[in-house]
Length: 225
Image 1: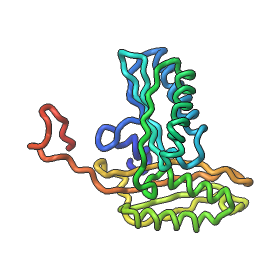
Image 2 (image 1 turned 90 degrees about the horizontal axis):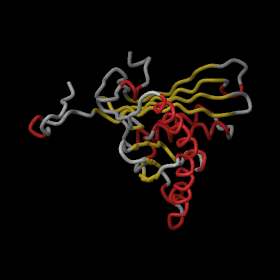
Image 3 (image 1 turned 120 degrees about the horizontal axis):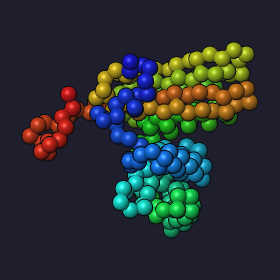
Image 4 (image 1 turned 60 degrees about the vertical axis):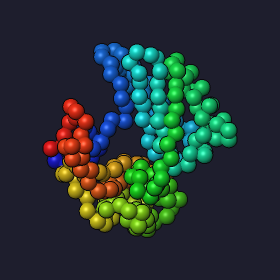
């Protein structure tokens, strides 16, 4: 089962958290979902490719306020000089949502083990006609040196401009896809070449997240089996 479902969705509630945290029903749910998609499209579109890794959205149920948490490997570019870039982004988001927007920018300390940034780097190299095998091997090597316990990268499509699409995989270490307590970062990225789109999937295993001892658990806390 762990090989067929989304690795992050498979672990929601155990070691992974939702990328959007809010509640709505009926027509409001559809509107907020479309708004979330527009927010992510705007944030990723305003910044250079590979600088923003993820966007988390949180809404307060009582007040009309949206909190956007941006994880990036280049916080200086996202914030801008004296906060000019982030202020401009806030104004555009408030015009889009018609709500008060609060932006938190978080720096990714180790981008070499972030699955989305790894996929974006490989996609950029493939678009520049770098060999996909070389790009995959270098990404795997850097991730393992950065502290990852396992990395797997799969590229599929008309690799190298071949007439027939195929799939190639580079793997090192272990990737326990069936283990719920395994901290696995996953990303699916596309690279656009003159021949076709190249699909890139990245799995990064960072170790196991074990439950805290019972004496350290707060009262009423859920203990993961």
